[in-house]
Image (cartoon, rainbow, N blue to C red):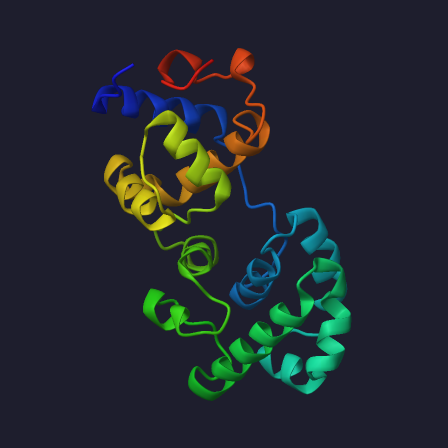
Length: 209
């Protein structure tokens, strides 16, 4: 199947219709909590992160609280998220930067977010999109896989896929489409055994088995 712009438009339409109520799986109440949750989500399920943050956010509400907690205690708080040594180091470093440079507030700016320890393109885009309602597309493993299978945005790296998704999807739909692609990847277009027989995109998917 040759994926034309018309087919891509139909793919986007179907995704938007099927997943119109899709929301972030992480639980947070402000950009600071979102930032911490996304850092913790690396190689960890959102369900597990939500258990950890439900406990952690009862004790900390701002970067200064993390600094006061100290690295060793923070490690104990987030141990069940895995990779806790590195994650604690990044969270502590990010909080220090927030306190020193941004008066304890998470900046609503991509380049400034990228300066924070533990923050890469995906995390920065999630914080902008979900935390500040600024159009952005964060490419995680689900988005990367689904975009390539649909040939909605083909690329060998998350950065290439991100840029091609930005061209294929209208800007006003970037943030929503991020969630559409994630939920489709979780529910239907799974990594090992995609459920092609029940996929609403089967007729417009070149990878449908």
